Image (cartoon, rainbow, N blue to C red; front, side, top):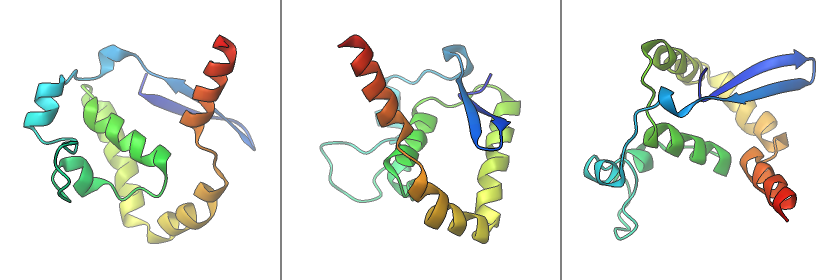
Length: 124
């Protein structure tokens, strides 16, 4: 199972499934800092990390996903290749990127934020 799997249930419904921790390389904060994967909160310099160079996301949800991918690299070669194919699809298809950016993402709620609100309501 991947980090998330999207299955189309019907014409307007999708099912998201989260994966297990064993599928990822575990990087501690020292490794993340040494490899300059994420921006150093003490350093305001632009492009000082892998994340700041790669992050061209248009939504907070996209930025959080990129950060999660960088913090927790995949172990399985097949999963890595599948992710690369998706990234390549968006890279090569300008029209798909533009449509996604200008239409689909504007209609999509921040699912991480909604999940947090739901969890908060259940706990409260």
